[in-house]
Length: 107
Length: 117
Image (tube, rainbow over all chains, first blue to last red; front, top):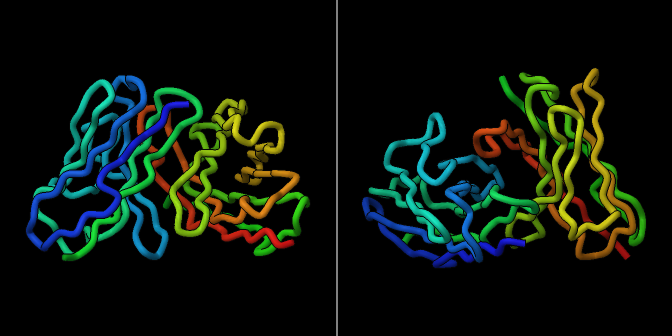
């Protein structure tokens, strides 16, 4: 199985700040990397697919990049609604696997 | 609009079988895939398996032969069945829609299942 190592696990940040979350795969995943946001009420929505493609309806302050085994999600200027959990997911091979999550919290 | 809704028991006894139904609307099961993902309390997401639009399935080997996914396209329903439940199967179970070229784009609200001894 491909292991996804996400960092940091917790990220205190302020409104308006630029933040980056990283995700490292245990082997190359050829850009087959997605990012999801989970709100405290449990609602999950996709943000980025295939490394850098913005899901429809997602604000442009979200962006993704990476290649090979290393990927990242950047939020350019934090809004109040961005404080949530974030997960990366590889769908390069079965079983699809998720990172352990990053909790983005208000500093 | 696209919706997925999971229905199932709140509580299942140890070693018994879990059955959850994902009822979808706003799209066809013969066009989109449906995946099952679970999340133990306070923990991360775990992919369980998929029902492909053509009717085939794939499973996470972590569940060995305990897991079965099926569907009834006439009712727009996808079914998860897992036997020999243990306490570490306590989790919220989600179904999610997927097309071949993107992420899991719509998720249900999930159903919280507790395995009790």
